[in-house]
Amino acid sequence: MINFNVPPYVGKEVEYMQEAITRRKICGDGEFTRKCDRWLEVKTGSPKSLLTTSCTQALELAAILADIQPGDEVILPSFTFVSTANAFVMRGARLVFVDIRPDTKNIDETLIEEAITDRTKAIVPVHYAGVGCEMDTIMEIAERHGLTVVEDAAQGVMSTYKGRALGSIGDYGCFSFHETKNYSMGEGGAILIKDSAKAEEAEIIREKGTDRSRFLRGQVDKYSWVSMGSSYLPSDMNAAYLYAQLEMADEINNNRLASWNKYYELLKPLEEQGKVQLPIIPEECEHNAHMFYLVTGSLDERGKLISFLKENDILSVFHYVPLHSAKAGLKYGRFHGEDKYTTNISERLVRLPMYYGLPEVDVEYIAHKVAEFYR
Ligand SMILES: *Cc1c(COP(=O)(O)O)cnc(C)c1O
Image (cartoon, rainbow, N blue to C red; front, top):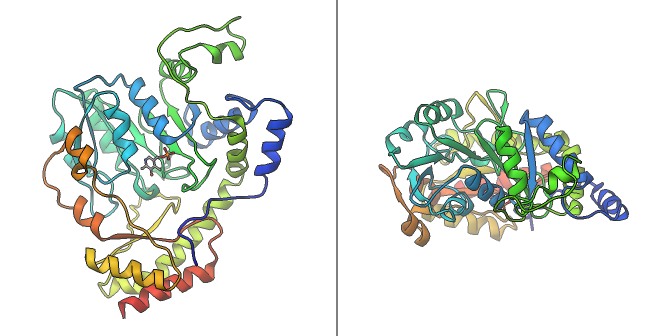
């Protein structure tokens, strides 16, 4: 059976976790947490990275920092994971869903401005499949209307837009290190923060509303409760696991890209015959091969393809059920404008196996079976 995903494992994870354990320092903000944050800051050019226990919590922290209040509106795509929406719903926001572009499946930046009202507070672009949204346009709109931009870059670690790292462009950028993502610590994430005052606020909120971070740096001689807060710190053991993979990020990235390019090359003829659509990567974007997907002809055809692949020991999956038509989406939001592509594409898209270390012969076998299905 060819699995859809196998979590990355590069070999040094256990050694680093052992090191954290031996140090008798496995709570948050330890040595490996700092190493991961520093790595992310250097790699992305962001002035501040803070590891969190998930991308979901990084998004929640961003929503608090953006001061989202009940009744505020947030603009986001409907074609995304539930966490993108939940973080803002938890602060009482109303969701305003906008359609996606048929090429990248990212939010259609040309539809954002007309969805803005005097209640709009933030725009949340999601970099689908690790391919950047049209960030220059989005940032320009946000600036003109005084809106906060929270990038959901859960899938975008190591990707760039016009040479800038995804997650480092907006006011906040949120990464995921869940085991289904390119780099993993089981459950984990990070938030990138542009503004230094907000970064200080974030350190306090994630440390239960205390100034423990400043205490650890020796800036105050005791720490106390200074604001509202929660606990968003991962254990240093998990950070140790992640750090082993970040050190190998180029190797992991290149390996995934090789699989991605092989799929693309082998499936291109099917696209030329008009049978499927392959991903489109805009020139200004460098992606990280987070996923390889196909857009099939119809919902029925997709179901048959997934079954056919399964009969041939290949696990493929689809996503997302558009948020605006889900029970909670109907309750918390509305779709602005016409749903031209969101539902249509979500019904036809299928993801093929993609993970670090996926053997080339497997990619060839999978591509061969997809071609056989279409014969
Ligand atoms: C995976 C994912 C998340 C959630 O990440 P967690 O780390 O599991 O909380 C959020 N948004 C998108 C687009 C994702 O793909």
